[in-house]
Image (cartoon, rainbow, N blue to C red; front, side, top):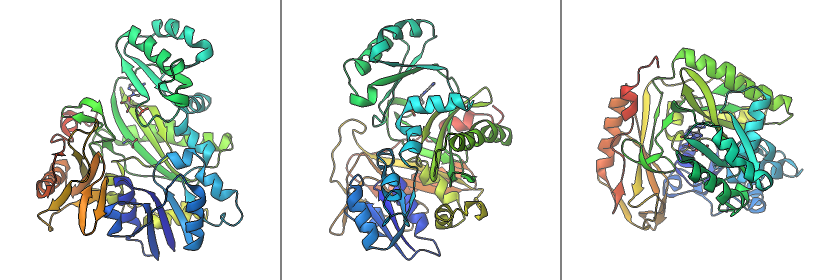
Length: 430
Ligand code: AMP
Ligand code: GLY
């Protein structure tokens, strides 16, 4: 069967790499893709937000499955677009419809969903312009640090955490009154700060049955020791040592199952991935956020650990037979280290030539912000590549990733040398 993947990051290269290995794949397209996907699939110059153009391409190329990498097209209703048109409804979109995508697209929707279905999450209250003046009293009733979230999609910048109550009040006003995040900040969620350790969990679901994919921990800050500004992610590790069987049982019973049941109870049909951003607080899981897609760079460590044919799972979603698919996981550890452009996440230059001196490296080099210029590969984004390796343990895998990184050169190459640093200290029983 023919498959179209939407997106252009490391996550999409990893999905393409996995689907390209499928025994039931005929032809693979990625739109718009990057220099990495161009080597294993056909890149198509489509705007993923132009649903009409995506649909026309899918019809013209006999596409059976459209895998949506990023959240924006899902929140804008790409799945609904395909479902509601008789000429397109035979094409299965992997990704929820607009209502399901609200789990990521609206923090208030997600919080209300969790409250309704008793899914553990931080205590919260939401505010709009009308009750903005009550925010101070609510904040005064909480302990610092204060967590303030713009309701809508804000390119990963909509969460502000501060120790200072005056800054908290100003932040709320900036969002609600001065509209610094535009409509994404018309509603603001203020919530309790959860102190613990974060982990990302994923399921793939057809709305009724689900498979739990490997978990991962990502490293969001630009600087070593988790310092400096947030980024799209500087590295990831899977499995995560503190996710022991006891914690996993809690996640399943208190988070995953109630989420799937909640979607059914609310009559939300959901086909695709659910990403649970969890905080482990004194041994118990709390949901910090839902995403309606796979994570980046988490995908670059979870897909290499899946031994089964991913396209079988997508087909299982299309034909309501996901429950019959077997998920086989590789026990080894996968690590990924992101190569970024110097200056990221602030301003950085693009168009630097990338060279790799050792073709026989022991890693999988997923491209993120890269593009082809003739036969040259150029940097084309803040996060340039994700260097993934497998090993018997984290150390072995990281050693391979860092050895490969030594062989990749471009002007301004930056990476964190301490991916996994915190996991060495964490007791598996914590
Ligand atoms: P989000 O955009 O929802 O992923 O939030 C960004 C980051 O803020 C998360 O990855 C957490 O590190 C942190 N965060 C969000 N909500 C909370 C909370 N209630 N308590 C502590 N940290 C939080
Ligand atoms: N790595 C976090 C995310 O994809 O949102």
